Length: 229
Length: 229
DNA sequence: CCGTCAACAGTTGCATACAAGTTTGCCATG
DNA sequence: CATGGCAAACTTGTATGCAACTGTTGACGG
Image (cartoon, rainbow over all chains, first blue to last red; front, side, top):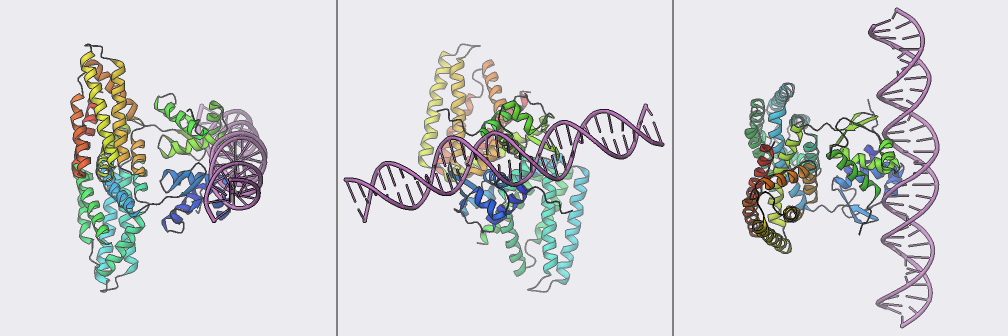
């Protein structure tokens, strides 16, 4: 069911990905009419999309009649990644209190799938060229795990904050992981033990332990991201 | 200068305060046309305002054609307050790295003003009826202090998150403080020493210490808020 | 009495139109 | 050649109109 959402949503997504990929460079001026013409829709949905992007901090109003793509410096991206670490800790804390039994079971099921993929990777992985398909499948699975943990928090506002903080870091991180695993395909795999520990903490309702585990994990990821540059 | 902003902003603010005061009760259905008629403006600005409120989590879409005021339970408000604590820690951490000399001086100046007000309060305060004017002035000053610390972080996205997290808690907290000080007008005043310590940490660029102080302070405030109910 | 269906009213999404203000570029002048 | 002012074009904010869709209500059949 390819429900085409609303035109506003489409415009928002297209513009956001255009910014994330650099197609729209920081500092570029953006006008409602211009974007409307580019996307061949009327200015009204574009207006909505620009408002959302502005609230996300991706574009900024320079003057009363001038809007441009926000100049996110590397330092700011680093800051956002740090914000994300803190938020992930909070998410884990809330998840420990609000997760449903069904969600916890889903988390375990996801990790089981990840384990299977891991075995496949280690068995069939040829040095220097691990199974690309299984690798991206594993990354997808881990992203699903994280998203499910987010859902366990049952706090839409917090989740929105998290989304905002990783607009830039998420694709960047995925790329980095692909590179790292390509050169050393055991990289990062030991960290999955912490995921099991996280689920145990969530199941026990131990919010302090859950936060600590999530923080350590996120900080580890952030450190890896930083030293990779 | 009563610059009337845009009608969208006005509508957004009016509706938000209407929700915060309970004038619009949780579960109430909201329509663009209905609100437009109520505010005697056209549906377009109302539409913008409703979109922003939806992103803030204050209203939610029940169906494709049905929008209602979000049913924020007390538990959710508590959660947001906890989010705010974590965010305040992050803000302090960033402020320690990014604060300018002028901002640090401004912070000291604000605390000097607060000290003066404190002396006035203690001198002239009659038991059971402290000087109401000086008290609200002090609260305003402390809010100014917090806002200035926020500005020191130089991280607009983070600040926006903070605003979101305290939509409900801020007026509530102010009211609580007024009540508490009314019955014991030395309440909470000892905490100003931590503010001085925070500025010292910011000046030293000690982000870890700044975060710790801010966290302890915020958690203290949260605990006071909770035990007051 | 209850379940189902159909028509109607109401709502949203989008396009277009218009007014107010701003930016920009050009021209005249020192 | 630099500078100041002016005008035109462009931009945003808001209003209005229209089409598609949805939630609801009432009636009808079982």
